[in-house]
Length: 111
Image (cartoon, rainbow, N blue to C red; front, side, top):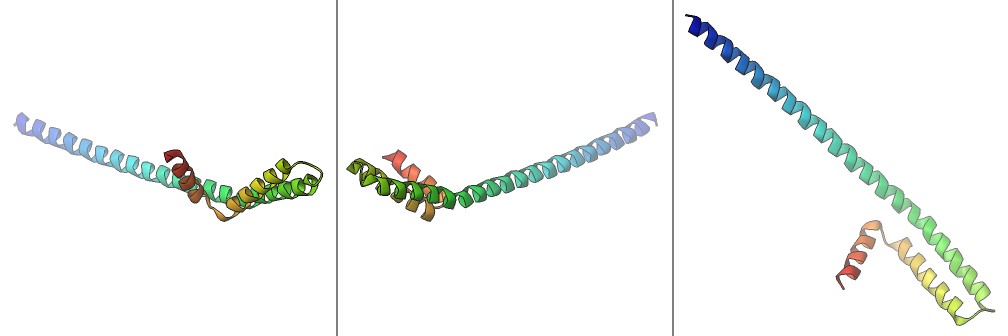
């Protein structure tokens, strides 16, 4: 009879352990899902901020190009060439999002 009681207690302990393990697994799974969501959202926010700053970067490049063209009249053709390159860069930054830039860099690296 003691064997039956011992068996019942062992079964209860095993069931309790399994239930506790299930709860821990669910908590860990939930925590991991929350962490993944937060990392994904942080990534989206970072990309959005970088995309938002593209216009100001393009504007700065464009102003520098204009300034070089203006003062380039008294300078060499190198100043005009540099200004043209800056203007082209400004146009590229303005029309190309980060994903497109990453793809372009990948193509250059493959060469």
